[in-house]
Amino acid sequence: MTAHNYSFKVDKKMSGHSKWANIQHRKGRQDAKRSNLWTKLVREIIVAARMGGGDPDTNSRLRLALIKARGGNVPKDTIQNAILKGTGQLEGVSYEDVRYEGYGVGGAALIIDCTTDNRVRTVADVRHILSKNGGNLGTEGSVAFMFNHVGDFFFAPGVATEDQVMEVALDAGAEDVISDEDGSIEVTCAPEAFDAVSKAFEAAGLKPEMAEITWKPTNETHLAGEEAARMQRLIDALDELDDVQQVYCSAELDLRTKNKTAPAAVRVASESDRPSALNERLGRSRIKYPTVFLFILLPKREFFS
Image (tube, rainbow, N blue to C red; front, side, top):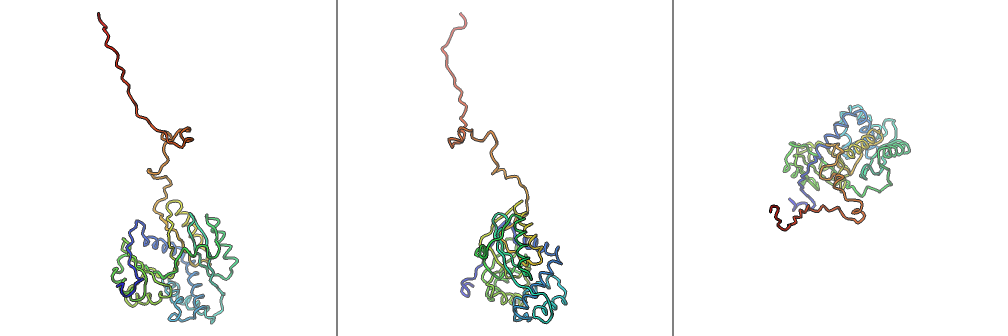
Protein backbone atom coordinates (compact mmCIF):
# COMPACT_ATOMS: atom_id res chain seq x y z
CA MET A 1 0.00 0.00 0.00
CA THR A 2 2.74 2.44 0.84
CA ALA A 3 4.00 2.12 -2.73
CA HIS A 4 1.06 4.28 -3.80
CA ASN A 5 1.40 6.95 -1.15
CA TYR A 6 4.57 7.24 0.90
CA SER A 7 3.06 9.76 3.32
CA PHE A 8 0.24 7.42 4.29
CA LYS A 9 0.51 5.98 7.80
CA VAL A 10 -1.36 3.41 9.83
CA ASP A 11 -1.05 3.76 13.59
CA LYS A 12 -2.25 1.68 16.51
CA LYS A 13 -3.30 3.80 19.46
CA MET A 14 -3.10 1.95 22.75
CA SER A 15 -4.14 4.20 25.57
CA GLY A 16 -6.28 4.06 28.63
CA HIS A 17 -8.16 7.19 27.59
CA SER A 18 -10.52 6.77 24.64
CA LYS A 19 -11.05 9.55 22.13
CA TRP A 20 -14.36 7.89 21.30
CA ALA A 21 -15.46 8.57 24.88
CA ASN A 22 -14.45 12.23 24.47
CA ILE A 23 -16.49 12.56 21.28
CA GLN A 24 -19.56 11.01 22.92
CA HIS A 25 -19.14 13.41 25.83
CA ARG A 26 -18.92 16.40 23.48
CA LYS A 27 -21.94 15.33 21.45
CA GLY A 28 -23.97 14.84 24.61
CA ARG A 29 -23.19 18.36 25.78
CA GLN A 30 -24.07 19.78 22.35
CA ASP A 31 -27.41 17.95 22.29
CA ALA A 32 -28.23 19.44 25.68
CA LYS A 33 -27.80 22.93 24.18
CA ARG A 34 -29.61 22.33 20.87
CA SER A 35 -31.03 25.86 20.45
CA ASN A 36 -27.54 27.29 20.90
CA LEU A 37 -26.18 24.71 18.44
CA TRP A 38 -28.75 25.65 15.78
CA THR A 39 -27.69 29.29 15.99
CA LYS A 40 -24.08 28.33 15.34
CA LEU A 41 -24.94 25.98 12.46
CA VAL A 42 -27.13 28.59 10.74
CA ARG A 43 -24.41 31.21 11.00
CA GLU A 44 -21.89 28.82 9.46
CA ILE A 45 -24.23 28.17 6.52
CA ILE A 46 -24.70 31.92 5.96
CA VAL A 47 -20.95 32.63 5.96
CA ALA A 48 -20.12 29.59 3.82
CA ALA A 49 -22.74 30.58 1.21
CA ARG A 50 -21.53 34.19 1.21
CA MET A 51 -17.91 33.17 0.67
CA GLY A 52 -18.31 30.34 -1.84
CA GLY A 53 -21.84 30.52 -3.27
CA GLY A 54 -25.00 28.56 -2.62
CA ASP A 55 -24.12 25.35 -4.47
CA PRO A 56 -22.75 22.67 -2.11
CA ASP A 57 -21.34 20.68 -5.05
CA THR A 58 -18.85 23.47 -5.74
CA ASN A 59 -18.59 24.86 -2.21
CA SER A 60 -16.99 22.31 0.13
CA ARG A 61 -17.40 24.51 3.20
CA LEU A 62 -21.12 24.84 2.55
CA ARG A 63 -21.39 21.11 1.92
CA LEU A 64 -19.83 20.36 5.31
CA ALA A 65 -22.03 22.97 7.00
CA LEU A 66 -25.15 21.34 5.51
CA ILE A 67 -24.05 17.88 6.71
CA LYS A 68 -23.62 19.23 10.24
CA ALA A 69 -26.94 21.11 10.10
CA ARG A 70 -28.83 17.99 9.03
CA GLY A 71 -27.04 16.00 11.71
CA GLY A 72 -28.20 18.62 14.22
CA ASN A 73 -31.80 18.32 12.96
CA VAL A 74 -32.00 21.92 11.78
CA PRO A 75 -35.30 22.36 9.86
CA LYS A 76 -35.05 22.40 6.05
CA ASP A 77 -36.71 25.82 5.76
CA THR A 78 -34.20 27.28 8.19
CA ILE A 79 -31.32 25.80 6.20
CA GLN A 80 -32.67 27.14 2.90
CA ASN A 81 -33.24 30.62 4.31
CA ALA A 82 -29.70 30.65 5.67
CA ILE A 83 -28.32 29.84 2.20
CA LEU A 84 -30.40 32.62 0.65
CA LYS A 85 -29.21 35.10 3.28
CA GLY A 86 -25.64 34.13 2.56
CA THR A 87 -25.99 34.61 -1.19
CA GLY A 88 -27.79 37.93 -0.69
CA GLN A 89 -31.16 36.76 -1.99
CA LEU A 90 -32.69 37.40 1.44
CA GLU A 91 -31.89 40.30 3.73
CA GLY A 92 -30.02 39.35 6.86
CA VAL A 93 -27.24 40.18 9.29
CA SER A 94 -23.72 40.31 7.86
CA TYR A 95 -21.40 37.89 9.67
CA GLU A 96 -17.63 37.46 9.43
CA ASP A 97 -15.10 34.90 10.65
CA VAL A 98 -12.66 35.84 13.39
CA ARG A 99 -10.15 33.69 15.25
CA TYR A 100 -8.69 34.15 18.73
CA GLU A 101 -5.82 32.32 20.40
CA GLY A 102 -5.12 31.91 24.08
CA TYR A 103 -4.33 29.68 27.02
CA GLY A 104 -6.47 27.71 29.43
CA VAL A 105 -5.92 25.70 32.60
CA GLY A 106 -2.42 24.27 32.98
CA GLY A 107 -1.15 26.36 30.06
CA ALA A 108 -3.16 24.33 27.51
CA ALA A 109 -3.36 26.10 24.15
CA LEU A 110 -6.72 27.26 22.75
CA ILE A 111 -7.90 28.27 19.28
CA ILE A 112 -11.35 29.87 19.31
CA ASP A 113 -13.15 30.25 15.97
CA CYS A 114 -16.01 32.73 15.93
CA THR A 115 -18.63 34.03 13.52
CA THR A 116 -19.77 37.48 14.52
CA ASP A 117 -21.47 40.68 13.44
CA ASN A 118 -19.62 42.68 16.11
CA ARG A 119 -15.90 42.05 16.71
CA VAL A 120 -15.73 44.39 19.72
CA ARG A 121 -18.47 42.51 21.55
CA THR A 122 -17.03 39.10 20.71
CA VAL A 123 -13.44 39.77 21.81
CA ALA A 124 -14.71 41.30 25.07
CA ASP A 125 -16.88 38.24 25.78
CA VAL A 126 -14.07 35.79 24.97
CA ARG A 127 -11.52 37.68 27.08
CA HIS A 128 -13.92 37.86 30.03
CA ILE A 129 -14.61 34.09 30.01
CA LEU A 130 -10.93 33.22 29.71
CA SER A 131 -9.96 35.51 32.59
CA LYS A 132 -12.82 34.29 34.78
CA ASN A 133 -11.87 30.64 34.30
CA GLY A 134 -8.11 30.70 34.74
CA GLY A 135 -7.07 31.42 31.16
CA ASN A 136 -5.91 34.41 29.18
CA LEU A 137 -6.18 35.77 25.66
CA GLY A 138 -3.05 35.60 23.52
CA THR A 139 -1.92 37.43 20.42
CA GLU A 140 -2.36 36.25 16.85
CA GLY A 141 0.00 33.36 16.16
CA SER A 142 0.79 32.75 19.82
CA VAL A 143 -0.46 29.13 19.80
CA ALA A 144 -1.42 28.33 16.19
CA PHE A 145 1.99 26.77 15.58
CA MET A 146 1.12 24.12 18.19
CA PHE A 147 -1.65 22.73 15.95
CA ASN A 148 -1.95 21.13 12.52
CA HIS A 149 -4.84 22.10 10.23
CA VAL A 150 -6.31 18.81 8.98
CA GLY A 151 -9.43 17.06 7.79
CA ASP A 152 -10.59 14.60 10.43
CA PHE A 153 -12.97 11.62 10.17
CA PHE A 154 -13.93 9.45 13.12
CA PHE A 155 -15.66 6.06 12.88
CA ALA A 156 -17.41 4.61 15.91
CA PRO A 157 -16.43 1.12 17.10
CA GLY A 158 -17.98 -1.63 14.99
CA VAL A 159 -19.00 0.58 12.05
CA ALA A 160 -16.24 -0.65 9.75
CA THR A 161 -13.05 -2.68 9.80
CA GLU A 162 -9.63 -1.11 9.59
CA ASP A 163 -9.05 -2.70 6.16
CA GLN A 164 -12.30 -1.26 4.77
CA VAL A 165 -11.53 2.24 5.97
CA MET A 166 -7.88 2.04 4.94
CA GLU A 167 -8.62 0.97 1.37
CA VAL A 168 -11.03 3.85 0.75
CA ALA A 169 -8.93 6.41 2.60
CA LEU A 170 -5.74 5.53 0.74
CA ASP A 171 -7.32 5.77 -2.70
CA ALA A 172 -8.96 9.11 -1.82
CA GLY A 173 -5.73 10.77 -0.65
CA ALA A 174 -5.87 10.49 3.15
CA GLU A 175 -2.63 10.80 5.11
CA ASP A 176 -3.13 8.82 8.31
CA VAL A 177 -5.32 6.05 9.76
CA ILE A 178 -5.31 5.58 13.54
CA SER A 179 -6.94 2.51 15.10
CA ASP A 180 -7.77 2.72 18.80
CA GLU A 181 -7.87 -0.30 21.10
CA ASP A 182 -11.62 0.32 21.65
CA GLY A 183 -12.32 -0.38 17.94
CA SER A 184 -12.79 3.21 16.82
CA ILE A 185 -10.90 4.45 13.74
CA GLU A 186 -9.69 7.96 12.95
CA VAL A 187 -8.64 9.18 9.49
CA THR A 188 -6.83 12.44 8.81
CA CYS A 189 -6.10 14.23 5.54
CA ALA A 190 -5.00 17.62 4.25
CA PRO A 191 -7.81 20.23 4.36
CA GLU A 192 -7.84 20.45 0.56
CA ALA A 193 -8.41 16.67 0.34
CA PHE A 194 -11.30 16.69 2.80
CA ASP A 195 -14.06 16.88 0.19
CA ALA A 196 -12.60 14.04 -1.91
CA VAL A 197 -12.15 11.76 1.11
CA SER A 198 -15.65 12.59 2.36
CA LYS A 199 -17.23 11.73 -1.00
CA ALA A 200 -15.19 8.50 -1.20
CA PHE A 201 -16.47 7.32 2.19
CA GLU A 202 -20.03 8.22 1.17
CA ALA A 203 -19.72 6.27 -2.09
CA ALA A 204 -18.40 3.25 -0.17
CA GLY A 205 -21.30 3.37 2.28
CA LEU A 206 -19.03 4.23 5.22
CA LYS A 207 -20.56 6.87 7.49
CA PRO A 208 -18.23 8.52 9.99
CA GLU A 209 -19.58 9.56 13.37
CA MET A 210 -17.73 12.84 12.98
CA ALA A 211 -16.28 14.61 9.94
CA GLU A 212 -14.74 18.07 10.11
CA ILE A 213 -11.82 20.27 9.21
CA THR A 214 -10.14 20.89 12.52
CA TRP A 215 -7.02 22.01 14.36
CA LYS A 216 -5.25 19.02 15.95
CA PRO A 217 -2.60 19.68 18.60
CA THR A 218 0.90 18.41 17.82
CA ASN A 219 1.34 17.61 21.53
CA GLU A 220 -1.43 17.11 24.08
CA THR A 221 -1.45 18.36 27.65
CA HIS A 222 -3.00 15.73 29.92
CA LEU A 223 -5.33 17.17 32.55
CA ALA A 224 -7.11 15.06 35.15
CA GLY A 225 -9.27 15.52 38.22
CA GLU A 226 -10.02 19.09 39.25
CA GLU A 227 -7.84 20.60 36.51
CA ALA A 228 -9.77 18.68 33.85
CA ALA A 229 -13.08 19.79 35.40
CA ARG A 230 -11.96 23.44 35.39
CA MET A 231 -10.87 23.19 31.76
CA GLN A 232 -14.21 21.63 30.80
CA ARG A 233 -16.04 24.50 32.50
CA LEU A 234 -13.93 26.98 30.53
CA ILE A 235 -14.71 25.26 27.21
CA ASP A 236 -18.41 25.02 28.09
CA ALA A 237 -18.52 28.74 28.93
CA LEU A 238 -16.97 29.59 25.56
CA ASP A 239 -19.35 27.22 23.75
CA GLU A 240 -22.33 28.96 25.33
CA LEU A 241 -21.47 32.15 23.44
CA ASP A 242 -23.49 32.35 20.22
CA ASP A 243 -20.52 33.95 18.47
CA VAL A 244 -18.20 31.01 19.19
CA GLN A 245 -18.33 28.36 16.47
CA GLN A 246 -15.64 25.97 17.66
CA VAL A 247 -13.06 25.65 20.42
CA TYR A 248 -9.88 23.68 19.72
CA CYS A 249 -7.80 22.69 22.72
CA SER A 250 -4.43 21.02 23.21
CA ALA A 251 -5.59 19.41 26.47
CA GLU A 252 -6.67 15.79 26.78
CA LEU A 253 -9.27 15.80 29.54
CA ASP A 254 -9.60 12.83 31.86
CA LEU A 255 -12.81 13.46 33.79
CA ARG A 256 -13.02 9.97 35.26
CA THR A 257 -11.72 11.01 38.67
CA LYS A 258 -11.88 14.16 40.73
CA ASN A 259 -10.03 12.78 43.73
CA LYS A 260 -7.81 15.50 45.10
CA THR A 261 -5.86 13.16 47.37
CA ALA A 262 -2.41 12.38 46.08
CA PRO A 263 -1.71 8.74 45.30
CA ALA A 264 0.07 6.83 48.06
CA ALA A 265 3.20 6.59 45.95
CA VAL A 266 3.61 10.37 45.81
CA ARG A 267 2.24 11.44 49.18
CA VAL A 268 4.42 13.63 51.36
CA ALA A 269 6.33 11.63 53.92
CA SER A 270 4.96 11.53 57.44
CA GLU A 271 6.36 13.84 60.12
CA SER A 272 8.50 11.07 61.57
CA ASP A 273 10.10 10.42 58.17
CA ARG A 274 11.04 14.01 57.47
CA PRO A 275 14.67 15.13 57.88
CA SER A 276 15.55 17.07 61.01
CA ALA A 277 16.20 20.81 60.90
CA LEU A 278 19.95 20.29 61.22
CA ASN A 279 20.09 17.72 58.47
CA GLU A 280 17.93 19.94 56.25
CA ARG A 281 20.57 22.68 56.64
CA LEU A 282 23.24 20.21 55.73
CA GLY A 283 21.20 19.03 52.77
CA ARG A 284 21.04 15.52 54.14
CA SER A 285 18.22 13.19 55.03
CA ARG A 286 18.09 11.84 58.53
CA ILE A 287 19.80 8.46 58.75
CA LYS A 288 18.32 5.86 61.02
CA TYR A 289 21.08 3.77 62.54
CA PRO A 290 20.44 0.16 63.53
CA THR A 291 20.15 -0.58 67.22
CA VAL A 292 23.35 -2.17 68.56
CA PHE A 293 23.23 -4.32 71.66
CA LEU A 294 26.53 -4.26 73.54
CA PHE A 295 27.33 -7.24 75.68
CA ILE A 296 30.06 -6.76 78.29
CA LEU A 297 31.66 -9.90 79.59
CA LEU A 298 32.50 -9.59 83.24
CA PRO A 299 35.06 -11.80 85.02
CA LYS A 300 33.62 -14.83 86.68
CA ARG A 301 32.92 -14.22 90.36
CA GLU A 302 32.26 -16.56 93.21
CA PHE A 303 28.94 -15.70 94.77
CA PHE A 304 28.99 -18.49 97.26
CA SER A 305 31.87 -19.35 99.41
